[in-house]
Image (cartoon, rainbow, N blue to C red):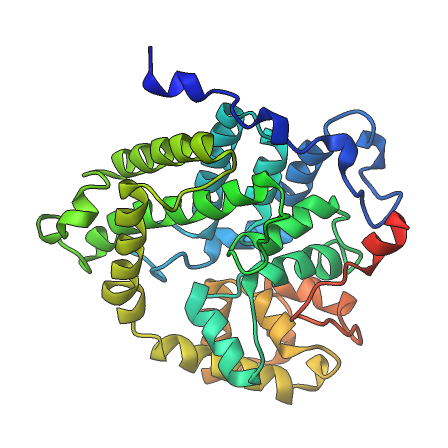
Length: 351
């Protein structure tokens, strides 16, 4: 018998129940015919999967932009890996698989082009805090479906905000912690592979603490998830902090920041985004739109294409052929606070 079998269902008593959901902002939408027919969080997964925000992730950077190798991850492939892993962990621990799947699908839809380099650009150009985790909930509520929003369950929106850890509290539901750890374990496990593919790292030169996690992506994930399950069972809550494997993992994560993430040249990205940002400010057609929101609607390819069009003085009429332009009319004059999602409707419903 697998040694982990003894822990199966160990957190079932903490499973978030669908009937305890704080609901949706709107009592009806285009998907209301499914409201009482399927699990609400499965419906949320469907909503996210069909969204423009999710489709954009296919052309948004995970770590390395414009890769020549088709097996380098992008934000979409990363999100799929997190969704698959988080649902397996939830099932094993006895937690809500559907909720984990929906949050994992949505967790990165708030990313601007070029991953964390783009996020840093927004902070620098505006002088204001920007969190892709919080912005994901804002995109879901204020941008999608012609500005009407996807009308996701509150827990999926809140879980999206929590996935980077800033919004996690002791009161947070256990499923959010699964996404928090699943996200980190997955991106470290596969980013090592991708860094080797592009030449940032050499497999034979990986430090011992990295190699102890596993010699392949699957070994790294397996060993970390086994340690997470064991520790969670022993502590009675989802946790991956105290075991030797967890210590090696977070040491590896810090090492990846020092040797990969922080070594990537962000100047070309900043140059492109600056040009696009200035264009949005100066062009009359976009005067009633927030340039940060507009940038978030672009893929890496869109940004590159805009930069090329600016160099060749292509007219705004030609630029209207770019995919994101079909969303712009619904954002004109709309004030969007991209720092903090509006959950006031939740309070009103719970009174």
